[in-house]
Length: 232
Ligand code: CA
Image 1 (cartoon, rainbow, N blue to C red):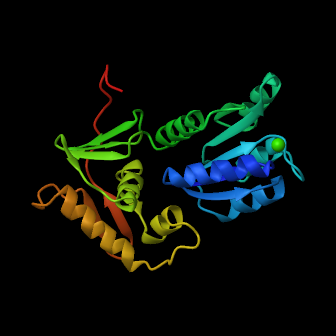
Image 2: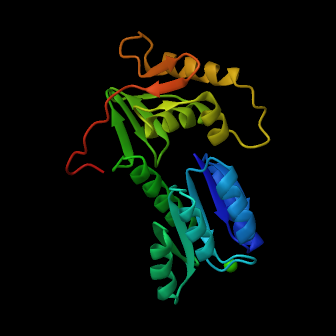
Image 3: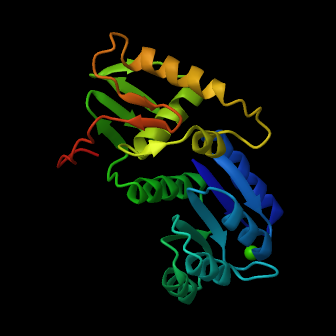
């Protein structure tokens, strides 16, 4: 998933960039409100984390403008501890959730994952479809209860396809959202990853979780399992 981090404190910004990258996200960052507007308009983002106190254009105004332009990705705001009015105003401007500074990274990560799940119609941190269960917290995958060894990138491809189960995801979209900017963008490597995923998830070619739509992209085909009471 591709996320934008907008924070003018350079130490905090680079720490968030490092930690989200290590957690498997493709991360863009901006140090002021104008740069944030540029990234929000130009990049195919899945989510943005926006600090409210920003140079050039306040975070609140960035959110208002992006929403006015029809950008619907989830927005998580960073606020100072005692400024409850900011939380209210931020949510009213179109933010979806907030984290209070100073925070611990696991809290920000959990909120980001929850927002991404909700935005894509999944309610639980374990996404289940057919015999496949993908746990977004541990980044592990099982098929019919047996764990499947995926490389980090194979996991990300599967996670992205499952987040958007039932939809066609183009090769370009996968590349733009999953590869870091400096990655060699050879689109045929996506085909290699999809091929490996298919062999690992469905070695007998029985339930065909990933469909190829020639010239259009890929689609995760299995039905999402409805939420079960009592599970996580
Ligand atoms: Ca700030």
